[in-house]
Length: 392
Image 1 (cartoon, rainbow, N blue to C red):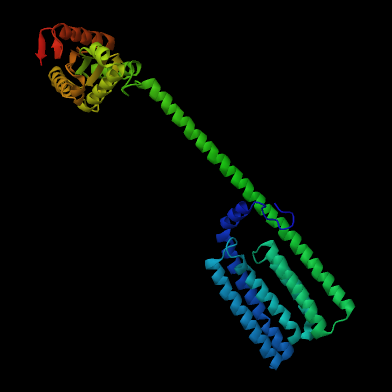
Image 2: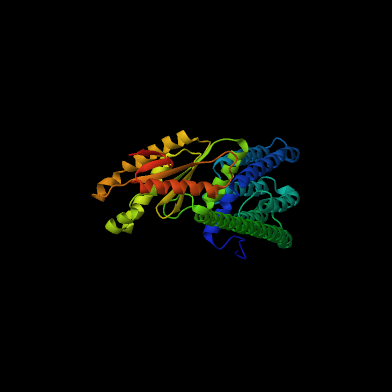
């Protein structure tokens, strides 16, 4: 911060600080100006007792009414449109108007110079500490008030050089005290602002870091639970979730079925069209699986071109219908046109859990055996039991 003005040396930071206190400054300025205007206007009573109904009194009243009116009007203008950043001159205007009003009292009421000196000292402190303003603005208005008052006192009150020196020293003292107090206040306020900004930046950085870590955790969880190629559940995650559902089915005595799905002649697809095309086939089949199954079903890429599907609360007949639907959906995939003479099809083996069965691996083994039965019998079929198959 600048040692003389108390402002941030960085113009952008200073502007941001002023914008941050704008609402508070508007309110405090409006309140302080109305209070100052009331006090300035109330001294018309003192003028009456000192001057009576004289020409000087009417001039003083007119001047006070003008200063009070302008101060109140400016208070409401500042409350609505005031801005340290864009219109600092608007905040400076009331100080200069009040300063001119105080100076004009001297030629109209020179005999009350003693009390006016006190009023100038109080007004000087008010410029620094009562009416919110930048230190540079408050200093320039206060110096104008003090110098103008001394010149008017010499010119219209005829004070001696010694009195002028004493009043001048008093004015200097008032300005030094006011300047030092406001400079310290400006420094403290900006230091507090800087600390708050630093804390906010640290909090933002912390929140960003937390979000980044959560994202990494989600990615790690995705890698731990999902197959990288197809996005389906991987084998270990499937075994955990399907095992829990199988135990629940056994406990609640509800049916539970399981598919083993194998892509027919997948090695020939890889050898003929390449592994890139083979990967595309696996992705399309995975998408078709996801679209063909229900939200409650758990789908897994078991390995290579094999997929397994757990179907909770599904009896044998319903499982067979779902498998047939899946087989037909795979056979109608658009990739068929790109494969030439190769036909895209799947073979499905279906195992149904027995009452109270909780061994998932045994259920998978039975479905796998039925799958290979279907492959030996010509592929492209759904096998529910050794003696029960549905040909394409």
